[in-house]
Image: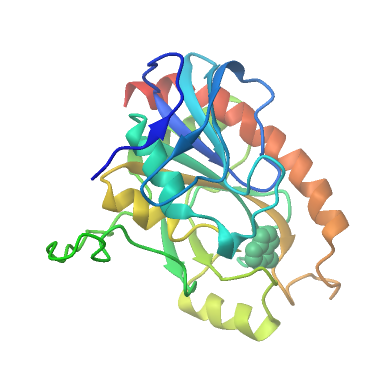
Length: 265
Ligand code: HPA
């Protein structure tokens, strides 16, 4: 497989990669070392990557929706994003996402480190093993543990040391978007076992698994899922933005504190 091509002034080895979602298109505490334009055999990633120091770790940061938050969930080139990180030497990814809360205890403002995922997305380029090289053998990947236990533990420990409450398990339901769900869809997802619902958790997680990378997700609940607001109000973008700002600030602190632990895994 041809490697990612990039314009790089330095060959830094990153300790881990962070893929940021809505509300995390940049990490303010990151001491930026350099930015790098990359290209993969799957095309362009969402944005140039940023190398930087976060706490005691060297990370590579990639904003999933582009630097200007212009790429919708179903248009993200997930394969290019995961491939460029892999080609840059990243073997551990922490993915940050904004989600709706389904489980009753997961009100807006909650932070969740999920342990499992259900994929409701469709039509996305979801595998590296789709036979792009004709004649290549069909490959199946184990996905029993979509989110790496060690990474989840490092995030949970960091949150605890900061006195930030997090839910250390939950099932992430990945929907297609960009619209939100109907109440009936949320009822169905809840029956299936979904605790939180977002639009970008897949196929990112399984693509990382296909490249044998450790991957964990940390999600900020920014709204009650459709039909789940106690007062029956509809989903409002204004209140989502307010929750995003507060929640992502906590996630930044968790990431900075977890950095050294994640690096040493
Ligand atoms: N549904 C799907 N994706 C989301 C939601 C939601 O309610 N909130 C934030 N991302």
